[in-house]
Image (cartoon, rainbow, N blue to C red; front, side):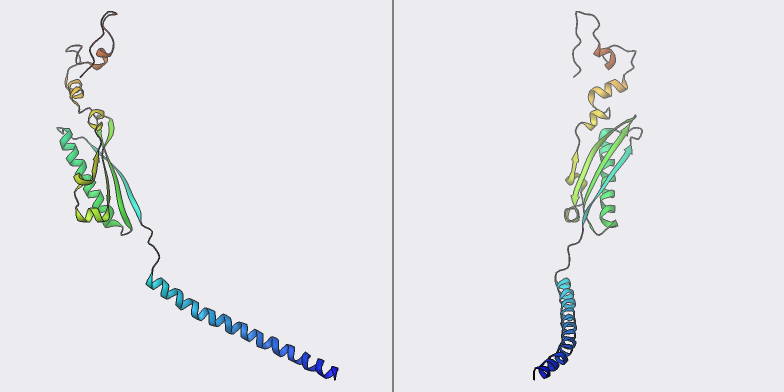
Length: 181
């Protein structure tokens, strides 16, 4: 009797393993058949966030003969406006544009404006004067200031007042020159 029970158990175990394998496969098929459509539905309803970025551009313009500082600023604004529009038109993932426009004048280079604007702000008002940040020291650094124009326009042999190098050193040990306005 004990032998018959062992025989029944011995024949039952391989049958159980066979069913267990089928059950595992059935579970795996069931899980995969529900997981993949669920993943597709979730992705369709709430897509992943787009990787947006800022387009950064550095531009340089040269001073043309007869340009004053105001005309250079207008040219810099026009260049910045065109670059911003190109930045937004060129890539749909660009959300912000950052442009720095530098001017070269007689070998001196200085940034004159920085344009930082988002796509929605630019769409509502594409005016570079509204979004630009102007650098105040650029006029002096590019030799467009009042004292700089005197130094550039004056003949160095005219007198000592117009020559900044001469003005920096005292004429005698008793007197010290007045600082330039």
